[in-house]
Image (cartoon, rainbow, N blue to C red; front, side, top):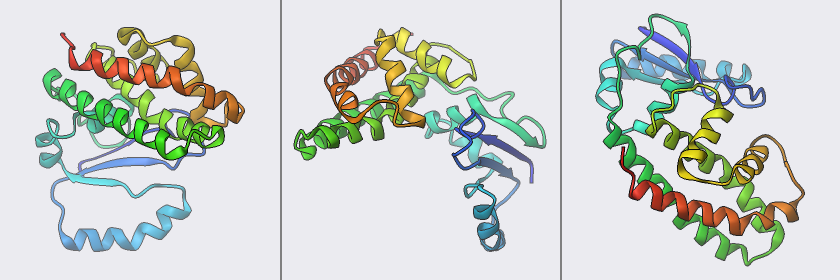
Length: 212
């Protein structure tokens, strides 16, 4: 065991979310996985999600492959055990921009498809907006990071990313409110969809043409 860090929504104040952790180790064998598997029921009872366990060298070599996922861990982490594993790590802006483009364009495609599948029913559209909002706000935090914003505050990072991409602050506030509660009645959430879709389309274009 080299390092354990906690990260994610639980660390950022969502007490209902399971605690997510990253454990960096010197090596990881099948025997190690078997030993961890025996602890899984105990972790589940304690409200701890199955930890992400990685050899430290693998983690460092994978920053270019998972710049968004690992970047979010770096942004929000709280050290539990060991030294700070991220002190000398840098995610290349080109890797981050490319990953942002892939995710936002995928989000846009699935959002359009899901709306068609909803049949336009207000309740179904409201559920679609609520279910997809966290992924969109996460993309805004990635845009903030792409802009050089380093804050660990979730809401601040989301709003700063929206500002950089010229996304409506009111829309972002409405979407953030949906992450932890119903936020608004179903019909109001459904009415957000046209503006929300336009914002996703705008963000996809902004990231596609992004210049540092």
